[in-house]
Image (cartoon, rainbow, N blue to C red; front, top):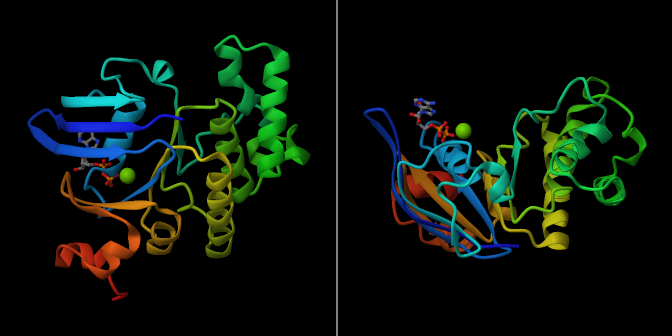
Length: 238
Ligand code: ADP
Ligand code: MG
């Protein structure tokens, strides 16, 4: 696993600057949660880390090496999306192994990794099904499995549970916590859900209009919010 360093990271779409000089040092193995209102730049930041979006300015380093100009594949970072982004025409197994095949892994290696991930995520019984034959929670597990088999340097999650109903969301949150305890993977996790943020995070970064308002341990933010804005997100329930 590798740490991720954001040094004065900026993003503009034409004239519109949406990320302003963000500095965050994410330790190897850390679980960092990003929260903030819709449109504040959370997804843009994740997409820049993943390499899905050009970085307008600043330096992004993974494991100590600058990666600004590297392709997503070269960065070896796995991203899990809210809508799962599974290939509808492929079985669960093929969804999970496709990326490894593209990278030239042997079928033994692919088989080993898929079996491991399927065990961890409890999806062994439906490896031959297609996404349409799965529940929302099962699809989310497959999306996570596809990330795990890559054995990436870090995981990025963009509101992965927001399409699930409340009870499934709780179950998957516990699964993600377990998975993190087991894998100790560097993780950046975007959520709207205060409980998810408080229970999963080593640290929480509260974003507002393209800047980080405050970053710290969940209880420190809860007890000592730096502003009303932070208090609204993390502080005592309103
Ligand atoms: P969040 O994920 O926090 O809801 P986003 O990162 O999606 O926010 O968006 C941040 C800002 O950037 C918003 O104002 C959004 O409209 C703008 N934005 C995002 N993607 C694009 C794009 N491809 N072109 C222009 N503006 C964009
Ligand atoms: Mg978003």
